[in-house]
Every structure is written in C-alpha cells, then in structure tokens.
Amino acid sequence: MENDNKLIAEFMRYPDLGTEGDFTYLKYHTSWEWLMPVVDKIEREHKANFIIKCTWNEFTKHSIHQVIVNIEQGEMSKDKSCIYDSKKIYDYVGDAVKCKREATHQAVVEYIKNKKKQLKIMEKLEKSFKKTMHVGYETSMSPHIEREDKVMEYNVGWDKDKERGWFEMYDVESGGDDYYGEGGLWFNGDELTDYDGVFSLDENVIQCLKDWGANVDDFV
Image (spheres, rainbow, N blue to C red):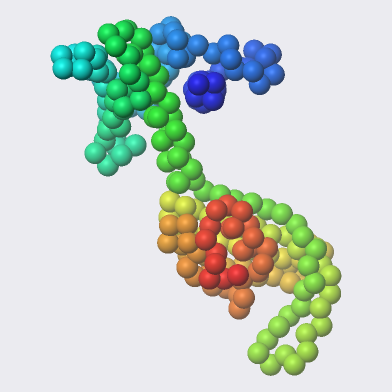
C-alpha cells in the first residue's frame, strides 16, 4: 500500500515534508479528503471521467463497487475505458463506504500506472557520452588498418513512438574531422531491425540501445 500511495504522491507532485523517503504518512487509501483531489486532477488535467457504480448482490450478500474511468481521447485503451472491479480483489461484506473508497483508490493507482507505461512506450530517448576507443579507417581495399586511441563522442537517440532512431560518433580532438560516423536506426516495437550509415554498427551504440531495453540480438 505504501508503494501505491508513493506513486500517487509523485503524480500529485506532493512534497516529502522532510520525512526522508518515509511515505507512511500518506492517507490516500483511508481518506476521501486525500483521495478526491487526485480524482479531480485526473478528471481536470487528463480529460477523464470517474463513474462509481454500486450494486447489491442478494445471492452473495456483497456490495459490489465498480469504478469506470472514461478517457475522452482514449489515452489508456482503444475502447476509451479502464474498468476496475473492486470485488475481484476485495471481499468486504456490507461495508459499502470503505469498499467504495478502496475501489476508487485502486482505480486511481491503475490509471497512474497505465499512464506511466504509455508515456514510457511513447518516450523519446536520447543519450550523449564519451568513450576512449581504438579506432582506424577500414575499407574493402585495406589490407592493414592502422589504429589509434581516440576519445569518441557518441550521440544516440530512439523515438519509440515513430520506431526510428539515430546515432552520431566523432573524435573529440578534431571535432569529427578525423573520425566521424552517423546513421539511422529502424525498429519494430522494441526490436532493432536495421541501420544505415556505417558498415558495422558500433558496439557502444548497440550497448546503449540494449540498456534502454531494445532487442539487439541480430546485431551482437
């Protein structure tokens, strides 16, 4: 529960109040006064609409609460809704008020998790770094390659939404006059499928993509 409340607090940009990482003071799961501002923020800033339904099951003698979050632009799912049924997790008998709050709290948590997941999928990743490499020019007519140690600057990017990426690398000493390479990257989801610009994709570019979670098995 503490991790869920921490997630909500981060969504609300709530200050730590000097507790040094202790989020046990958060009361989103026990207080409507804490929880409703979160619902209001989601509805106001994310074009969503919370609908809380309550039905009484005479056979099981349970109050069943269902929280439906309708999204105006289908931000969470293609059918523009995220449904969370409290009875699937909670088994309270008759305590409708507590069960309704619990269901709303869990719906809020699920909304924020899905929102973060969507933003992660659609994010644009970029990284710049330097590394000393033993470099030299290689061509199909080169019987012998003379190499030297150079500090190389790398710039790598991956636009997950467009499934495209790019890379650039050059030696810092000459600003790219001596050694320079660039190219494009193509993805199918998280899988790197192709690249251009260089004969062989640099190991540091491959490692950067791998660190970001890309499947680079075909190029290792």
